[in-house]
Image (tube, rainbow, N blue to C red; front, top):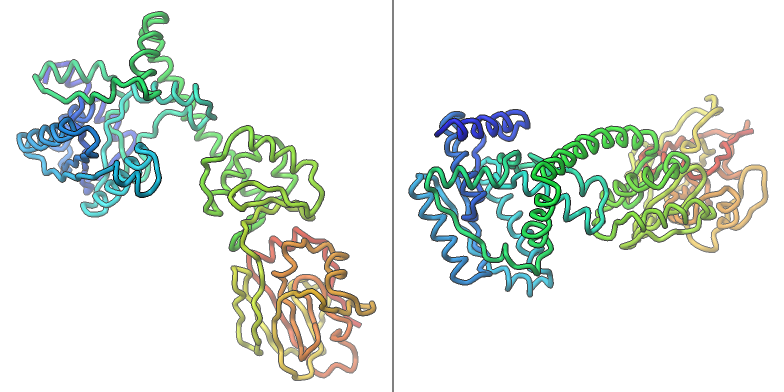
Length: 477
């Protein structure tokens, strides 16, 4: 290698150490298409493998989309790896057929299949997959996302490492790559689809970037790359801030429910959008329909929404303000399941609604200052059970007359979405405790009480519920 080549190799090696792209015992698996960037990357990795003593392999994926040209790429990569004595696995995947089968676009289908192959290869060889993205790709991605509309994530530079995907030649420009390959008489394949202007990225690569260089100077492209890197650093700083904000605002989650403090969530559209992004991820919803306009519309709708009014997000997810909390939930019903309960046997409530413990205690205990998620009930030995809310049920609150359970729950401010999730504790045929809300007048402890059953309800859902209603304390005479 000449001095210029040595400087580039040194720059790349420093970059791999700086970003900890692989460990000493990792296998580095180069994804080689046959184009100039991937051929250069393979050449560099070959040199680095001698210096760092890691195992080097290669993979080539033939998408079977360009006929003889695709087959020619496959033959070229196979010959190159044979010449350089690099083990190679070749995958032939009919992307057009898969696209039709799964009703997805060609590009999305190809990307999904590549990621599946990368994951399999990485697991098989305990390795990382090296992709040949360059500094030019950072600029092109920045411009592409800027033009179509994006936020800070879209303007942020491509990550050097994400999970088991690494990009070792990211700081190198394509112009440098071509110069190195030509100086070593190393050939590569040109993908004819890179010249087709039906693809937006090709317009940017072949027309917009040359225009910027011509009219604003070569340095302007480097400035764009530098700005994208600075935005990536800024993104990390913001992510740290939002992790702190998330810890402050977060109340709890259980199956299909995520809850935040309203006043910490609806501070501004940007903060709300970041927290909403986390909600959708937690609920297993994709972010394809996530946009600045949608976030602002939802933010404004929630600001003026009445308590318990559902605001639709999308894909079955809705938001509702209750008490001090802002609750996000998916379309699945949140409902307790009927079951008999027994003393000293822990009860697991379905749907992530927590656990209950039941014990018999002395009636002489002090029952004051207890949590709404605890109850002390006079007990006469009858069968005990937990049942879900149903229309037509009646309940006799403390110091009050019997009333419809629906009216009682409404008076206590229990959100409608949680009414079927409340464990209703029955002794015999009578409702003794509305879990998390209040015990019945019929089961309060007095001087004639001989036996007391103590119930304690724990779990993430209790934290969500406690912020959603204003509790009245369980009382005793």
